[in-house]
Image 1 (cartoon, rainbow, N blue to C red):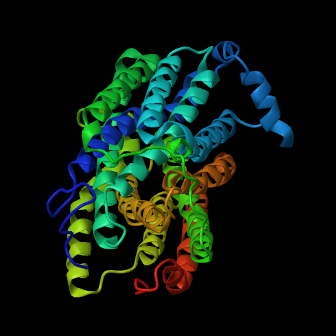
Image 2: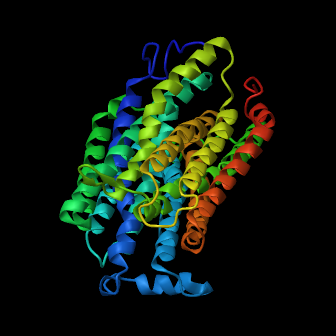
Length: 454
């Protein structure tokens, strides 16, 4: 595809300035969010669920009784289910946040409210009693922020240039990955030295940097007047637009296997490293929570190469369609999970798995993510009818919502089977999903855009 000559905001050829402000904002938000998430499962298993601490958590006993409808479960299983529901609801609420932005507040105000709510949630994590309330604040704050900031990225580009838009989302996602890679290192180190609650407090402080970055970039961001404030009604969708939305929903649904298999590294993966991977170095044992950074490192390392590779393919007319990229990324997830399975094959003793297997698997997962998720967001941004961008971007996050909840239940069986069998199962989920997407890729891409069905 040809090079962009003019962006939606009058910038010369290349990417608009607003992209970099949004990327910087999201980098700090992800720094905070993943820094907290890296500690969450370990914190629950090692401290929060200890009897003397668990009794202090408001509502925890009732929640455990509700989840134990199939019988008593271990702390590992209970932690996996809490993490799954938390991570899932984080991806459900963007649909609500998108509706609020489109119809009531506009994206800019909605994102600011989201950042403030998330800051309060991270701070509330610093106390046992408010643990569940903290998760609620984080869920609501993320819902107000996630889809809306992604929709603003899409609004920076003309609809006619899929390749540049896809690369723009890849740059944006690189900011996400830098934050996600560095956050667990900082919070993990602080938690190791000063305790879990200090790690959570650091995450709260860093959320405020995201707010400052977003405020500074306001003049470079697209106008976001909500539809409800306009005198004229939003135009009704045409038959073609309704069909395109239906296909979009199918594409979003087809990412569920990837969103089950890949995020497993953030919950069960950290427990697996803590229990089975040899973390000893010449300078001492590294915190297992640091592995939460590895997939993001893989994404950061992969991003420049992928951007250059796709640009080279675009000039030659051989760049795969967006749907094809999603299928490729989903299949790559299976490779990463299989490395975990092979590295643990026949080993059952603590600290018996070489760290190289875990690092390689995590890095490959990061490459997979850069293939499938930024591309999915670019598909939604480009194909969404006018006036529905933020809402449909929020709908896109229903895939990780459903997937994370399912992943929580899948992860609850981790301590009931060998690690190699568990990771082989995780790989199979991704492989089935990726194969299905690749089989349907031409029909899906043609329905989204008849000119981009390669």
